[in-house]
Length: 382
Ligand SMILES: [Zn+2]
Ligand SMILES: [Zn+2]
Image (cartoon, rainbow, N blue to C red; front, side, top):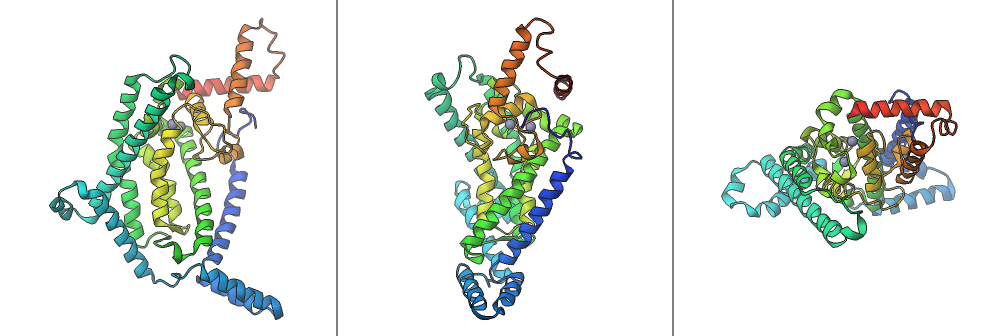
């Protein structure tokens, strides 16, 4: 899909959104029917078991096989919540050994959780960014980068400063999500055996589809809503040249911006059954992922939204809003591949060196005017 035929706003993409939302709702209903031992599951399984002859026998066998995956399906909600609290406390004890015991004991459970999330967030950010920086710049910098394109030390320091200031606030999001899950306000569950491995995989897929959709629109909204871009997302787009981006830019956001982009992970938990520890690992894995997509290296692994795509996002402002994959950018027409970008650059170069008038014949009038509009919008975004 070309770069200039994308829907300009969400109103033009409403039909796609409606189809997606309908399909997702239907799939979510099917997911609920499939939850072993759940009310809908028993209702459908009992109805199928009434079928005459071999069909009924096959349905009963299938249901018995399905239930065998989930030996803890009948665990009462009260016990599930208790397990979640115990698991979270175990994580706190594991990570807070660095603090004096008396200090940990004096901190309420929520504060302990927040401190643990902050320490983990900082550890993931600094360890991953430092390792990746060492590997790509110091070990293989001469092979991976053109001379003069490695980010300056002062840019990297600035990114560290912005990230460090934002991390204490980021940490409120996972701490708050843990609290809501412990109170039973989410659809999360503590043990894979509550749903069984096959259902765990299905729910994981459903969860990620919704997160991907949510992150796409949250990110696009942060660009297209002018005040949101000006006061929130602009901070991350200070690094708008390829050679100013580094793995340390991965968490360099206005704190509210960073939290908003992670909010789909929490909101999806409200209605999509999800193993809580898996949710939390996914949330922290975004810290690893964001390191990777800010290193300017194009890995060419379709449909992964890697650094090649995200660098274009930083330089063009209006393409490649996706999280892990390019699917929603393709669906809404905002994808620009690194290869397409190279072609456009070459075409622009040719246009610049060609005598006046000779190139205009190569482009039709409509495309030229759209390019003009895009250029004006990009300038406005700056
Ligand atoms: Zn952006
Ligand atoms: Zn970025």
